[in-house]
Image (cartoon, rainbow, N blue to C red; front, side, top):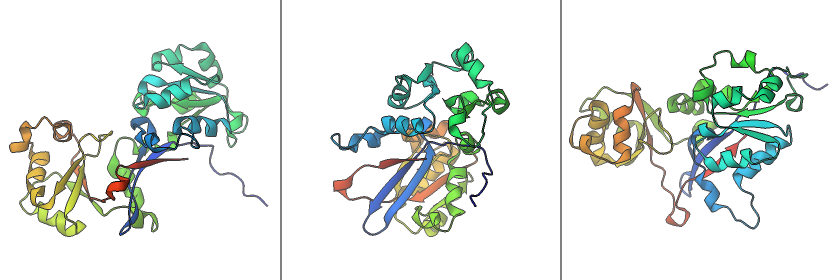
Length: 279
């Protein structure tokens, strides 16, 4: 006897930053919402046999429901927004005002799904950056006819620590995540030694919790760790005058802690980070 569904339908589109070397195997350095990311991994596909990841996303969604709306201005990857917007069954709306000025959207969005466990019974998908949709606190009640992509990942929005913690909660996933730690922004001369002892490596990746597209990511050797930590915590020191975006991003960081993880090296003939879509 088949199991009865427990939860309504849900679709999340995420990207994972993976690295591989023969010593450590595959490591997932990061998972985050695709709407915040630039999918550079598409550069490495074999054009003759592999479809663009953006078109593949559209094809996959269309297996379940062909209709959708995208608020393109809110999506970081313009190729992704363009792939959806140029589909004959999707509608592109520049921003939230334009979306809710669309009479067809408003009419369809109000029509509840006949079966909340069946994607095809909804009026279509809505793909929008959460920073825009979050201003509507009751969007689920106002849009019962829409499958809002990424809805279940909204609680993890723009906080890499909360996303990274998911790895620690699963025995298998924890083995494929580089060693990492979350550290309070309290500077001491012992902090660098503590991090080195925790992660047991010589090269570190320091990440702000609320930045994306590589902003604020600093890769540093052990001998320079203390100086970098002093800057990102106190905003003082020689690095305070740096124009490098990796350092400048920390001046705007408002979180009370930051992430440090071991650097996973990859062979030079496989240089670059590779991304995959998770459904």
